[in-house]
Structure formats: structure tokens, C-alpha cells
Length: 196
Image 1 (cartoon, rainbow, N blue to C red):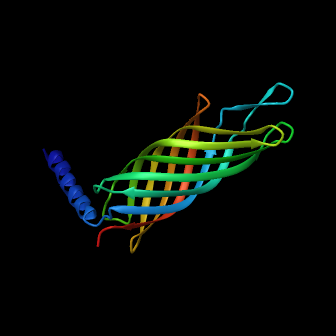
Image 2 (image 1 turned 30 degrees about the vertical axis):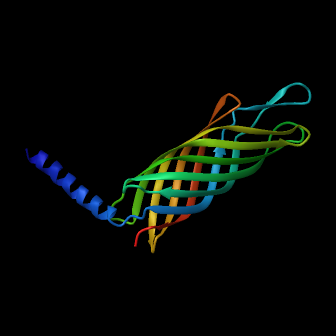
Image 3 (image 1 turned 90 degrees about the vertical axis):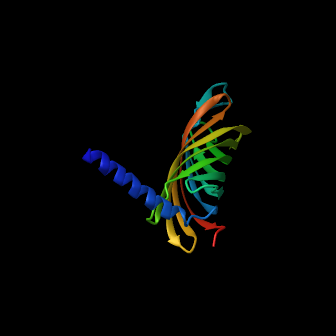
């Protein structure tokens, strides 16, 4: 019986802290930052001799931007856009592969607001990706496919509506009838507004 009272007391305390934190959240957020994406292509390119070479793992750097509408304290609706770029060498003549990837994903973000300056969140975002691959003497290819981002991060409140937002996501893409398992690490700055 004592354990039951203890658990009930903890739940009531936690709900009071969460309610106080929810009194101060802002309904709109905008953010911009740096994105690093590690792409496991799982693809091959045809060589001039008729053979093929496996594309390497790609390390891409770029930007990310997002707009978030928070209709409730714990729920945000995210629109996330990004562009990442890189040039990679691999083992065929003229081995420089230039890559540009643009993504656009949308979906829910679940916030664990509390009385500290740290707000952890989890997200599941879905949309598409547009990739451009170019290899000298082989030509270029443009691909469009599905993208899903699953992960989370934490908002670190700096005061006066500003936050730092580190984030990490597992990124699933689907190009050319194959799935690619990728990783996204991002850090950015955000501004929250909409409530006095």
C-alpha cells in the first residue's frame, strides 16, 4: 500500500510540474542549422568496361530548416527541409562522385516539457528526397524517393524565446527499388513565438 501511495504521489507531482511547464510554451517555432548525413547507398554504378563498382558510404554536409506548430503542449507538427552536399572518391577511373540531396519531411514531434531549460523530444517525419549524383565521364543521375526520419533531440532554452536544438535521426530512404539506412546529426538554433 505504501508503494501505491508513493507512485500516486510521484505522478501527481510530475503532472503539476508538467502543467506549469506547459503554461509557458510557445505555439510556433522556426529554426535553422547544420546537418550532417551519413548515407549508406547500397547502389552500384556501371563502369565503361561493362562491370560495375559499388558506391561508397557518403558523408554529406549542409543545412536544415524547420517550422513547427505546437497545437498542444506535448505535440508539435513539423515541416523540415534540408540540403546536403558532398564529393566522394571511389575505386574506378575518374572517381569523384558529387552528390546533392534535398529532403522535405513532415510529421509529429512529441515534447516532454518540464521545469528545466531542457525539453527532450521524439519525432517521426515522412516525405521525400531528391538526389543528384554526378561522376565525371559517366554522367549524372537524378533520383526521387521516399524518406522517413525517426529520432529525437533536446531543446536547450537560452531565454528570450531562443533555443539550441541538437538532434539525431535514423533516416530511411528508398531510391531505385532499394532501401538505404542512413543517419542524420543536426545542431541548430530556433526561435519560439506566438504567445506573450
